[in-house]
Length: 598
Image (cartoon, rainbow, N blue to C red):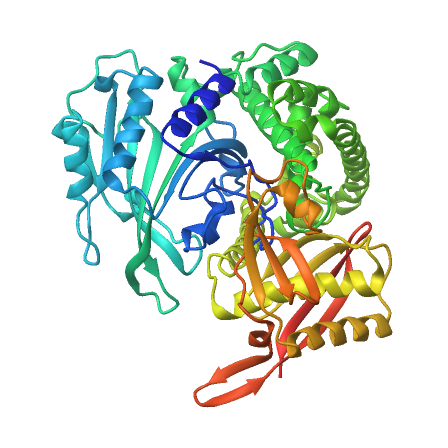
């Protein structure tokens, strides 16, 4: 079974179970990106897991493209990936454990034809806070999964969420496949690497609040997730994801231009895997409009491309990223936006490769200066070369060895670790506030982005278009298409318009329509391939005066007056919208940071 067949069978199966197919969202989280990338299928539907009504109903299904960079240093083995696709089906306050488990097993055994004796499952063991999930285990047993094939595992293995500091969460029950040709053991041992996880039903029955306390959720949800690459690999009796049709054409291309055979030696295998993985991830990030830079998504993209080039050197490759990218457009020809942006993607890869080769040249000159008349190189010096010039430690080592100079590698690792910890803290901070929080302040500021967008278009013209946003309980950040710095008068006018809209106490109304109808009615949004059959349109204003109308999936207040006040016990404090900063975000894109303050 290949990738496309798996996805088709999965979607069709759940559509027969009355699930509506929803669109495959951008890798760049829309409306309120609280993480750099979409990391799981559930991320784009967080508002609906929190109780907001979804335009397509209570049963949803899709395949979602995802990026995870947490395990970037693990890429190079048989199964870790930066870019991957995730199968997902959801029940938003509709069916519960029994149906979720039945659907999962039916899909695995009836549709994918996996013999039930090759399956095992895990359930939540329980702890001092939550009871053991015996209910799920009993359901599995009733469906002919033997008791010995059911393992109860702790929170670290069988508990999900919440995504941020607050939100929906709960125990999970995972499905495992026996991948080996060796006899299947009677008892399930989760430590045995021949048992491969191929699916996970998260049973969201709790809500965690800001105080860190858990309560029973008003809306219980089911969230199933399953990796496409891993599932295709095991179904085809393969031990290595890079031999599946999601990767093999890229590996073949690398073999062709290097003259090496995949499997020849461990270092070459690892290099080929990293190149294939990183180029694929880079192509998809570029397709969603990100370009290499030194911050946020652009920084991750730059790191992926440069890491690809570094490992290319191990295979004596130069000026190669564009060539290796070509098969990706064939593998994923079901993604229209890849084809539409093909020339731009290839050009950006080529440009970044040239830039890095130039950087390596500068780094080489600096290295020669640093090591002149030296017998050793400190960890700080090696890290400075890496941080300032992107000069890889491997190349520093190569050159130092040639010249008989010792490097303090431990010192370099200490410096690098410090840098990684700072980066991780920043990324986690970004993740911990926003939609997963959906608190009162976040909801107010999310609504304020609609007012800001409308004000910008009034003052600067209708070509202004939102490019992204990030919202914490303290401030909003809004990126928009515009090619120059705003004047002080323009910023003052924008603030006045937003504050006037707050004072006018406009109602905020939501309705569900088709994307075509939304466009007809003048709602702002991206219409090509971003939405399903129905969308939520939020209108701010009255019948006589429409201030703003946008397609949106975020949390909103019910009246703009809520933005202008904060209740402190019996006292009401009055707030105003204020622009804190306006700056360049990237070429042709400006960024505004703003707050609601006294």
